[in-house]
Length: 241
Image 1: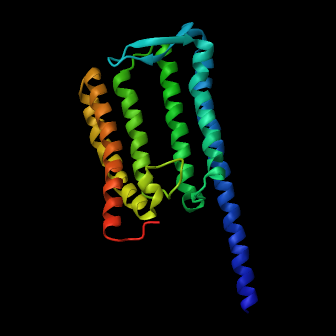
Image 2: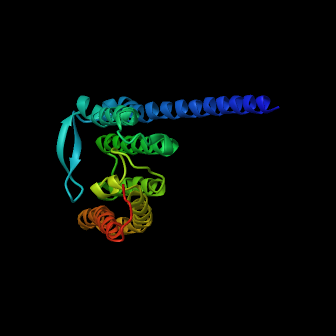
Image 3: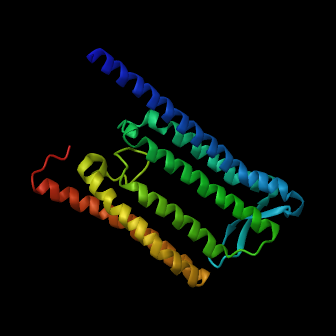
């Protein structure tokens, strides 16, 4: 009877693994689709695109750097492909070997990053075609939406050297890592939700300075917290290895 139960568990485990592998493969195809979307859109609008496409914008939303369109349409998809490859194989070389503990979360992060870059690529093509776009509002909103995604997933991160709030103190102690990421999750999620209406209603040049200040805040607060919490644990005599 016990042997039958063990065999049933093994079969169930194999089925679960097969389902997970199919899910992962389906997510991989989504990456390729997102990478291809800006290129497909650029090919569709090829005759309408200028020979020199805008690839960078000043703080007031005006284009200040251009590139030949044959190169411009591949710059974002190329960056997206490089990051896709790097993050896909990052778990294999991470010394902490913790990626299996948040495998699905990491898949969502990678896919979110690819989708984020795809939106930027689409934005550059539409701007090149001549569609009126508020650069100083649209780009920060896209970034904030990505921050909201990261914030919602951040508390599930486990110690690693590639993603998350990687400070000397979070990498030394899993307790500090978890506490810092719980704080970061709330800060990034709720802060970005509050920032979206601010970005919409304030002029583009002011947006730039507010947005830079906001990024500094959500980066520095978790960093400072990880240091303070780490020192507190050491003073109280906790084992933080």
